[in-house]
Amino acid sequence: MAIMAIRINRWIGRLSRVTSGGNFIPEIDGLRFLAIGSVLLFHVNYSLGRAYHWTLKPWEQAVSNAFARGTLGVELFFVISGFILALPFARHFLYGGKAVEIRRYYLRRVTRLEPPYILTLILFYAAAWFMGDPEMRGRYVSTFFVRLFYLHGLVYADVPALNGVTWSLEIEVQFYLLMPLLAQVFRLPRAIRRAGLAMAVVLLPFLRLQGRMDFTVLSQLGLFLAGFLFADIYLEMRQGKTVENARYDWAAVVLFITAIGWPWPDPVALWTLRHMLPTVILIFLCLMFRGRWLRRFFSWKPVYIIGGMCYSIYLIHYPFMSFFGRAMARKMPGMGYLSTVGIGVLVWVPVILVIATVFFALIEHPCMDYAWPRKLWARVRGTGAKVGKAERRESKGE
Image 1 (cartoon, rainbow, N blue to C red):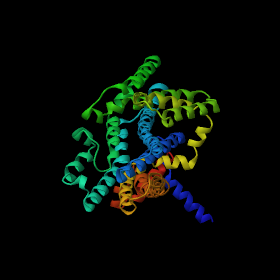
Image 2 (image 1 turned 120 degrees about the vertical axis):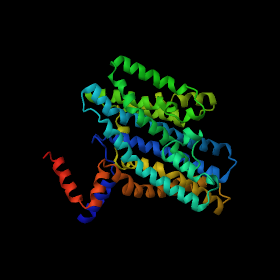
Image 3 (image 1 turned 90 degrees about the horizontal axis):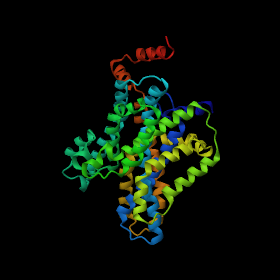
Image 4 (image 1 turned 30 degrees about the horizontal axis):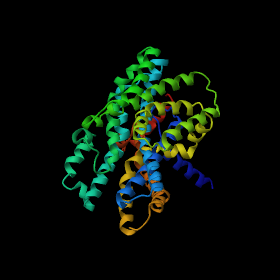
């Protein structure tokens, strides 16, 4: 039993995210669970719809429309990115915290995110070539190298044909590059800073961007800056004692249902809602972090562990879903909408989570250690033991 417990704890350790500053906020990974769950449900519905080409009944269309709101999970990811990356800069400029080392900031982005991305790019391109994907015929080499440098949207003004969800990663990378410059906003006085951020959060989403501009960080900047503004509010909340109140939970749930689950019949109203999402998400976060039960749910270990694996899940999920959808349409062409989507949710999603868990434990998690390139090079040279001893002495302050 003791050995089994040790092994279980070891695997839990492999599935726990490693943060660069050591300031882990479980609720944020819990929110990532909400975001990736929404995206998964959307892509189950979307991939099956492309494979089956159903003519849906009105009630089935209502269910499909509800799944389609899952795209809003991507917007939540952008807000979370803005919040997480803004925190160390805000701590430094507002509360005298440790200054952010810009070189280490950029190096961590590369060592943390690039290996999983490049590996999945190679694997999915190889699989598409081997299986003769008609959408990729004649486009393998050109699109591969463009995507390697996160330039597909800027070059082609369109989402990629293979694993198209990575369009959002290209925008994230643009944001990472600009982050140290954008973070200078925290040098401004409180009233000017918050007023400026609030105006940007409300107004920027209404900019009309087309073509390549739609694939730039400007198209999502309101969402990232909503994360900035919440980082400012969050740090102020942390300075005092935040009193938990279940009324904030109810307000957050009502806001969530209204924005995500309400059957908005008017296209203009839905368009307006979508462009107000940075504001809606910001209000939701302020309510949730003052609540009681939602914070406990998002801090629940199974929830935040799955949320912490969202990058691995995001990178690999859609090609598998697309493959499963086409396979089902060939083998079971007469299946109805509800039963097929049920299989997708109850069977595909758990299978994809298992695959993503293995990928996270073997690939992404080791890359969370900012020193992994140095450790790997030391092992190649046969000096791994010396590096390990030096790091242990460093951690003890010797």
